Structures are given as structure tokens and as C-alpha cells.
Amino acid sequence: MRAFYCDHFVLPLPEGHRFPMEKYGLLRERVSAVVELAVPAGATMAQLAEVHDAAYVRRVLEGTLRPDEVRCIGFPWSSQLVERARRSVGGTIAAGRAALRDGYAANLAGGTHHAFQDRGAGFCVFNDVAVAVRALRAERRLRRCAVLDLDVHQGDGTAAIFAGDASVFTLSVHGAGNYPFRKERSDLDIELGDGAGDDAYLSAVERGLGAALAAPPDLAFFVAGVDAFEDDRLGRLCVSTRGMRERDAMVFDSCEAVGAPVAVVMAGGYARDVRDTVDLHAGTVLAAAARCAPGAAGIEGAAADGVGAARG
Image (cartoon, rainbow, N blue to C red; front, side):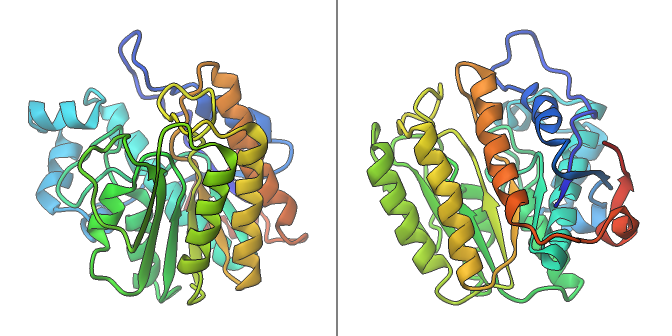
């Protein structure tokens, strides 16, 4: 299975910043023996502008964001932020292409579901899944798509971007009392209370998947946040490691049952010990890789996938 990464495009953060940037490099190391790693090309201005206001994209690229926009994103602006954000979106576009070809693929970043058409928010600059959907549609690679967002925080930006678009089903299973505190309306939102635990969480996921995949999509984007985990600092849903593994299997089983390829993106994870976050993310990626058909196309397909350089 092909997996795309951009962790070597380092985003400088102030000391003590709560975002666990180190998880991405550790995740790549954990899965490197099993997946075929490649570096994606950055998303282009034209691709970004298919989803985001062109004026907002220019402010990001040129470093002219207003102070309130920077605060809302939660990262200080830098040229490294721009390159990292473009590559992260490019990884999801490339993963979508690879999944359509091979059945499964992953972006070892992405899941930036809080970015809206005209602004970033919650550690999200651009909405990678939304840009990927529009890019793949423009390439005539897909018509119907499902976004299976199982991060503990609602995919509010994604819901808003695709509101009224019947070709994209947006599912969000998330904490009712968690960020964002002003929710948007997905095609299906399933909210859970603090301390929900495995049974309630998995029941919600099962119900959501049934609805999202009732009309089989050409491609499913699995926003595979692991912040529902019981020792996550921000999640509060108290789902065990076993529950998280069962969730992943449920997603893959359900997509296979309707013949939908799966592109996995990482989204959130804020465990008290970053190694727990890495273990959970790696479990998702390795479970997908185990299901990917043997003999999938090799690195020679890099140009078709929008790959800048292959490594690993």
C-alpha cells in the first residue's frame, strides 16, 4: 500500500505548544517497513482555490493573514507552514488517486477538517479532504464520495463546504461537548457525551457507516483521528485501544462490503504519551495495508499520483 508523508517539511512551533508535531515522523518510522512511502507534490493555487476563497489562499501564501486569522488557526505563520500545508493537502489528493487504483492508500498527515472556505481554524490551514474531492472530481476520477469523519471533534469545515452537495456524504461521529463549540450540519452527525466508552462509540460508528455507505461511493475518505482514545488529553470519550482497533476494522469491512476504496488521513491525536498516539495511528495504517491487494502498482506510478520525490 502506498502512503504519503511530509513530516520532513518541519513546521516551527513555540516551545510548549500543545500540538504534537513529532508524531508524524515517528509514525512514518513505525510503518516504513510495511508501506511504500512517497513524498507528495504540494497542492497548487488552482486546486486550493477550487475550495477556498482565492483571497484567503493568497493571504496564507504571502504571509498577510490578519492576527485574528493566525490566532484562529493556532499556528504562527511561516514559510514552512505554507509548504507543510500545501504538501499535506497534496498528500490527500495523491492518496485519493492511489486508493482508487489500489483499493487503499494513506496520507500520514491530513484530516484538516476545521478549515472553512474562507478561513482556517483548529490547527487546520486548508481542508485537505475537500480539496482532494474537488481535484479528483475535476480529473473525472469520481462522482460520489463519502467522508467518514471519526475524529472526536466535529468536521465542521468539511460539513460547511459540502452543505447542499448531494454527491458528497459527510458523516461525523464526535463529542457533543467538545470543540468546535458551534457545530455545523453534516449529512449525519452523531454526538456522544463525555465518557461514552467502547460500546456507545462503536454502536454510533456502525450506525453512521450504514447511512454513509447506503449509496455506495466511488471513494471513501476515512478521517481517522485517534483522539477518542481513553488517555487523550482533549478527547474525553474514553475509548480503549481495543475499541479503536475495532473501529478501524468496522470502517474497512463496511467499505469493502460496498466496494468502496479507502483513502485514510490521520487527523487528531493528543494522548498524554505521544507514543500512544503513534501506536494508534500506526494501527490504522497497518490494518489498511494488510487489506491492500498484493502486487499494487509500484513507485513507477509516482507521476500519476502527483508525487514529488519518493523515499523510505
